[in-house]
Image (cartoon, rainbow, N blue to C red; front, side, top):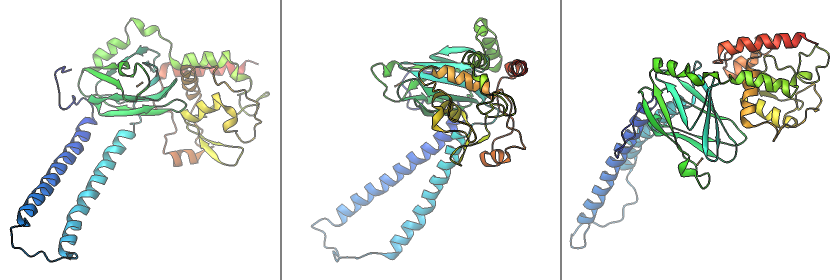
Length: 352
Ligand code: CUA
């Protein structure tokens, strides 16, 4: 990374070029329009100066000028709108195969966890040429994840998941900032993103800290520790007092009030912490609240585990695929731990 003063930050992601092009266009357009207005002011000031004998008769309006101004500005403004929308869609739609990383922000640090379990604080390693999707939540106040070199900035909220994605193009070290004032050490809530070539990244991933437990595995243990499986079992099984979690993720859940809700990360999180908020149709509200008992990271681990419990059955919820546009298979969970967990879950399901 270049440490000397830069007017423009490094451009190190697939989004950077698109954002910069739009930004430069807007800057150039502003300069041209400002110059035009300044020129008009100068010309009119001189032309209508007091000494000049010119026609000062009141003019109501001029159709020609007005129509010409509209004919020129309308396509330009619509162009900016469409161009901006295109870039916006690009920035907010993560590719399906993006590598999942979870982020927990707190005063005043960034905690990252990779899909294989590897944890990092204030430093994030990622490979080039691989889209990365961050699922983020805050443990306290609002923070904002900002990597100027990637042209990416997303608020990180308490109580709700937000996500962002990027694909780095250039190996190097890039500054990570918190871009939302979050207390005394807000200005020190900085870190770095270390972008490596795929080979270097693979080497780093297999390095000595690789013993960190995969999130889904930690989640499975939490699931057992809190004995969630006592109630959450397939509907036909005895003791199934809670809805089954198999195939829950990305399905549509019918609620007691008659509505349905998409079972995304935010819904599952809310249902763990405040189960009474959205009561599932056909079940009594007997689940205790886990608010304050499970940490944000613990909730993320539980969700990672629940995601491994199979995809929504295509026959039971065709609406989910149609409405959400989501694929039937959960996108990018780690394959090895997933199989492990499924096996563990199966055996758990068969034991009385
Ligand atoms: Cu976190 Cu500012």
